[in-house]
Figure 1: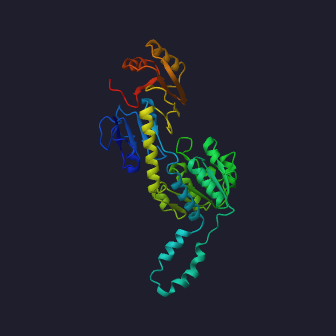
Figure 2: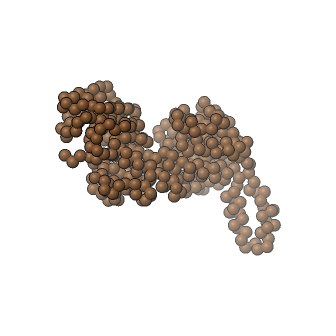
Length: 395
């Protein structure tokens, strides 16, 4: 039986997918095989040696110690696209509130509650204070064309905006889904120079931290508007505050408030609502659970942030799974060990991603426990496990 520890409240629509005869699921569980988490910070949590995988019910994974997990052969999964529609819808809202002073107008109208019969006249007299430009015909620069970025770009086209996209690492799937009317920008600076609005849809990694700063703001049109519902660290906070104060940037909409931004009149702070819809929470939980089940039962890897994508149609009930460092002759050493035990290989796949590689091997014979010890002696091996008929054998 596989044991799954939940570190946060997870949507029941996801949890109910675990078959109760093969999975034990609980918030407190000794020696779990996998962890299911949302926002819980795992950097200071001692992760048991029994854990083979961690699934994050959401796209971001900054709360998971990915490097440490990789060194231990723990696959880390996220759920890209599970909350994409929720974030896309909030981005469209952000475009509107950054452009037209809707929030200011609502707050002012609410202040008129004690004016009785004067309200209608006061509204007509004061409404001009809250006017702002329309989106139609303006240029939107979308930085990052993953699941969310593509949806935002396509919907902005439908709104009549001219859309530019920048993503040097765009996937084939994303490219297929992207509207042909979206113009590709060759450089980030080129996109910034032409955009009236810029929206960010990127992960926060070393290469993207502080992506927009004082230097980048100088490329932008005076009075451009920036939307960041992805990660707060993508924009240098001190620099954006200065840009707002000098009106270089007309508005900054962010899902990541801070005391300094809340005190800045041109900053519009949303309390991290990007994925806060019941549909998004359900979608992410369902994706995370399915990915964990596939990995635990078949070894299949999809949407892992540290392991290569790797799947293999199963030809035998006997399956060997090996995670190793991406160095020469690893496959040869593994197959040699199997051959020495007279174990015939029916099918094999090996994929690598950066420093790490992953192998799925189907065999004609049952794999003895002794194989684990022999393969583990090979330099560069990180983790080895056996699956028999979709279950972990009890040796």
